[in-house]
Image 1 (cartoon, rainbow, N blue to C red):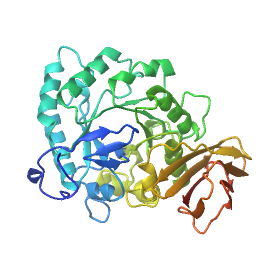
Image 2: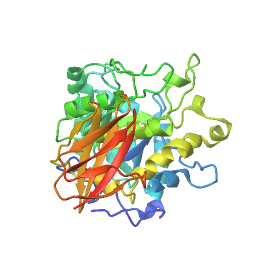
Image 3: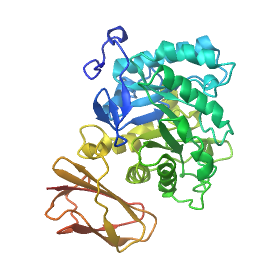
Image 4: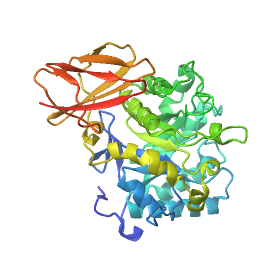
Length: 405
């Protein structure tokens, strides 16, 4: 076993091997024996990029909970150039304690002409200290990539490197049976959904065009993957539907980004990714020079990550297995909630969809719990009674409660 927690900021040469990433029986990620809630970026700042105040960009993301990011090269990049670029990203990631999800589009849909190259790549990088995951074909159902080619990528990678999961993201398209066909071809499934734009919801193909469609697609992933396989949700920073020349630029606000993150977790996501931080049309003059959307990060994303990062009051709940307690609600039909138990604490995460403001009653908690606090909203307090509580919820509002035994 290769322990990496004490190696942050050492030269890459001092990092002996790649960290083992496995998925526990409760669908929680375990990195070198330590439980983890992966937070990722597609993509992160440039490998040598700086924050606006001159600090290391990778280190900044790591500080606020980032675990991995997609490392790769665009389709059609000559292989020597692509691998040189990925080498640099892997090396810088290892130095700062991040992991890479290795992504080379030209070898993800495997056929006779590129399987040998894929094998050479996996053999070369499977022990690299910056490696965390392998990324398969992006949005294969929407791209009509045959399942057999996606499956072959998985089979080749896992035969050579069982220590790192294979991840695939699907587009919000197709049907449940369409997407289910790809389920055997990955360890971690994901779906991307970017509902914020003008008009709202154009990225979704479901009838729901509101912010809460994120939860609808999370429900899809939970049904596709079943109870024994984790999934991630890919959430919006910026996407083509707000950056194309005929579109009006729009970013999620802090309450919107927070709602999407928490709704994903409540519906079962065991990790989150954030897409579009490097989208050129979404960058102001300062950020364009830095190669990443630090303005959005500072105003919106950093406060969200601050609630989820390791060391935060909520983080133990993100690592906990599913709880047997299922709360009953009354007063509104569109409140989603999740109970997690971590040590002596019981956490309740609750989010309202788009219904009108209402007071909601929750019941079904273990008897004798003591209310501790409403996380991130103190001194707000719900009305507490034995076995439950009640509180007010506005549209797309999130509250997080902590109780002690």
